[in-house]
Image 1 (cartoon, one colour):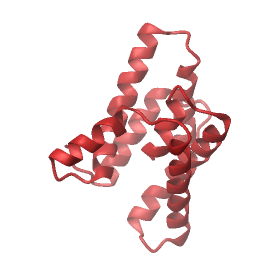
Image 2 (spheres, rainbow, N blue to C red; image 1 turned 120 degrees about the vertical axis):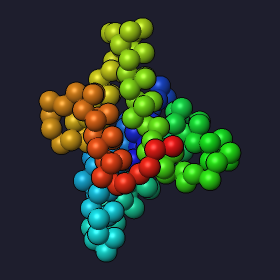
Image 3 (cartoon, rainbow, N blue to C red; image 1 turned 60 degrees about the vertical axis):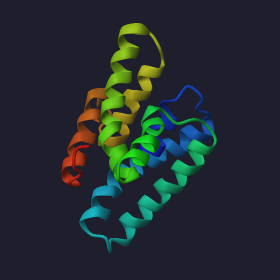
Amino acid sequence: MSQVIEPFICNASTPLTDTLCRDGIARGSKSLLFAYVNGSDRSARQGMSLVSIFGGLAFSNTRLGAVHGLARPLGGLHPIPHEIIFTCLLPLFVDANLRALRSRMPDTPSLIRFQEIAQLLTGMPHSNAEEAIAFHFELKNKLSIPNL
């Protein structure tokens, strides 16, 4: 999921990567937990396969963010799976970026992206950015992901 969220909020996104990311975020929010709970759920696994493909295409054609920037050195220094690092760091970095944008650039259109992520994750049209952060923390708990 971080591989479709980071390219969506980076400053080099394009209409192509935005389309891939939007679909990937919405699809991942519906499929990830089902694939985890029931690994033989073919539809959920197919959904996550598409999220993975969309993420690869998106970040290959734009940029990633600080989560990916820290994942490699953390994984190199500690025996922590790549995905665990992403899951633990993503909501923290989204929160930090959101707060920084609100205080430094309150009129930036980038803030709309954070709200859109929440709407895609929750499926609710009036979700706000804080709900995206809460969604990630809840998902981390449901997936029994340990803290770093």
